[in-house]
Length: 471
Image (cartoon, rainbow, N blue to C red; front, side, top):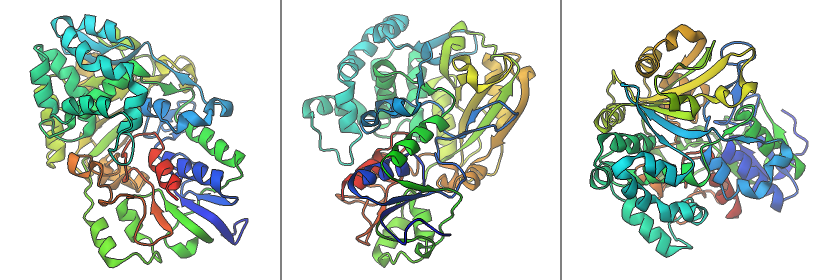
C-alpha cells in the first residue's frame, strides 16, 4: 500500500466516530494526519447500507443518536455545513404493553410527568434539575475522569445515579408500569438492574430525551460519519479505506499512532512493542453481553396497537421491570432468554429517504449471551407481534446477525458487545486500565481511543477527542 507520505505527524487506525474525532482533533494540531480504515466506508458503528432490498437504507449499528447531538465535541464542528441534518420524532420513546396501552417519554418533561399520573410528581422532581442543566451535566458525566466543573450538580446527580435501577425505581415510583418504563431505559447498561449505578443510565437517557431529544440522522447514520470525514479532509487529513492493519509494519512511519480498537484487537496487532505488564492488564479487560440485531424491509408501518407507538422513533419492548431485568440477567450470565427485551427504531416513519415507494424500514436488537452464534430473530419478531399484531405479514425481507456474526462484521464488537466492554461501575472509568490518562499505552507514542476508553459506548466521539487532546 502506497501513501501520500513516508512519514506522518499522526496516524489513526479505525474510522468509527471515535477514530474520526481523534483524527479531526489531531488535524487541528498537526500538518499531516492519516486515517486508515479496514472497511470500504468510514463510520464503524455509525454506518448505513442497503442491507435487505435495493433502496431500503438501514443503519448498520447505531440508529438513534442523542449523545451525538449533545456531544460537546461534535457541537464544535458545525456539521450542518457538511450536510448533516437531524430529524426529531414527535415522541422520542414509547414503551407499550400487551393490552394496547403504553407510556411515553415526550420531549416535554411536563407532558411526560402529566401522563405518568400519580408518579409524575416524583418523576419531574427527580429529573428537573438535570434537564434544566443538561449541558453542564453531560459535560461532566462524559469526561475521562470524574473531576467535575459543576460539583454541586454532580453531587446531586450522584446521589441518584449511584443507586441500582431496581432500588431507585422501587423508591420513586408506585406504578409497576412506570417502573417498567425506567427499567427499559436503565437496561441500555446491559447489566442486571440490581447492580450499583445502573440508575445512572436510566436517568441520563431520560435527561437526553427531555433536554435534546432522541434524534435520527436524515438519510441514515452514515451521513454523520460522512460529515465527520468531510470535516477531517477540510483540515487537510488523508483517509485510506479498505486497508487492514495486522502490524505496525502495515502503516507508514509516524510520530504518534492512535488505535480506535478494543484491547483484544490492540493485543493482536504486531510490532507495537507493548510492555508485558501492560499487555497483561489489557488481557484482563472484560467484555459484556452481545446483541442479536435485525433489520427489516416492510411494506407498511408497524401496526402497533398503541397509537402513540406510531409517533415514536424508538420503542422499548419488554413488559414489566422484572421481565426486562430477567432478560438482561440471562444475557449477562450466558443463558438463552425466550422473552427478550427489545430496542426497536422505526426511522422511515420520520425520514422518507430510508425506503422507496411507500415502504418502511425497522431496526431492532436484543441482548444475548456473549459470543453466541444463535440467531434469535424469531424471538424478537414474536415480541413485536405481541404489541403489533400483523407485523410479520409486512416483512418483505430481513437481515439478522447473531452476537458472533456482529463480531465478524465489526471486530470491535467482541462477542457482539456493542459498548466496547462491560460498563459496570468497576470498569466505567478504569477502561481499558486504571490510569490518570487511560488512552496512553505503555509505549509513549501509541494510544488507544475506542469506546473501550472513557467515557465508553455511544456515538459521541469523546473517546477519540480526549485521547488526541491529551498530547
